[in-house]
Length: 81
Length: 81
Length: 144
Length: 144
Image 1 (cartoon, each protein chain N blue to C red):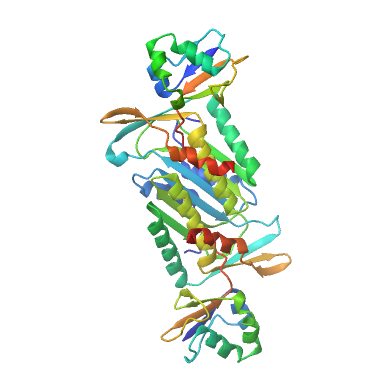
Image 2 (image 1 turned 180 degrees about the vertical axis):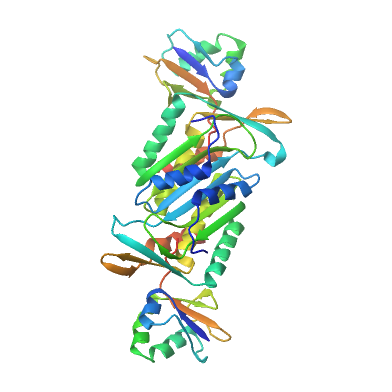
């Protein structure tokens, strides 16, 4: 599964995308799995209310199941327009 | 005092403007004075709820006094834009 | 106020270029509808002298109400054909909400408070366009 | 979606010319504010792939909700400077209310539901623009 990071999430984690071995049942599980890795992940995911998530390029929430998902992206609230 | 007519009011009365001798105290009095003249005026002023009026180029109502007024205009509701 | 056509895009660009520090420009163009092919032409009558005063007053009201960097009203009169542009407004502000509301306000007042009258000529004859009750109602939201 | 600049007026004219029987065209242009002279440049990041899907979905929602003759969304990404145009939307309808509401709807959703992020660089450093609570609130009126 590809995991993508944008804006300050990308900067804090230090990379724009990476491949993560499947296994997390939900987005929340994936966040826990990544946060356990290293300080920089923990910093990025410290306050998930400040984050948004997309699963397979559709906006999702932290309880969205990841079964069959190919791409998960984490980013701050969007500021288009 | 100049009296101006626009749109179907102009067409019904048959002229765009005329000079009327002062004397009417209010717009309503002027309407009564004009309506008494001829059939075409009576036809134009038959239903004053279908008419709008401007006194000296400002929207007014039928009770607006005409003391000192130089120009009164009658027309249907506006359809700009 | 003008009888001549205007270039919507060029006016919009010039208007936007005149602004400084504004984040939002809203424009509106009003176009002669062909009424499903029935319309031959439209004639727009106005009240010279009062028209200019009314447009100025409407623009001043918008500037008093919203934080605007600028506003623009162009309105044609005379004979127009289907697909011709009748008029445009533009409003610029720091934020999009103000620019949108000001442009809607300009349009709502222009529609029912500026001395313009439209006459449509179709094969069936010529008729003055009746004011719509909903255009009068539209003014109410600005009077709250 | 494009990195290159676009010509707001030319796009607005072309959009209007593509319409038939529409009486109302509303356009919005978003411009980089100079923050009182403090801004050096703005960088816009987006999520390739998702952006196109999100814009299409927002436009489809607008067409499902209002009687529109057409709509347009152009959004730049990459580096922009003060007074550069960031994006534009346009909406055409028979009546002005629909065109205004659809354009506001496109903007409100673009602002908070399309994957764009702005970073502003001033003399003081570079910072990601924070989402404003009022932008999130603006979506509520469309969910009634």
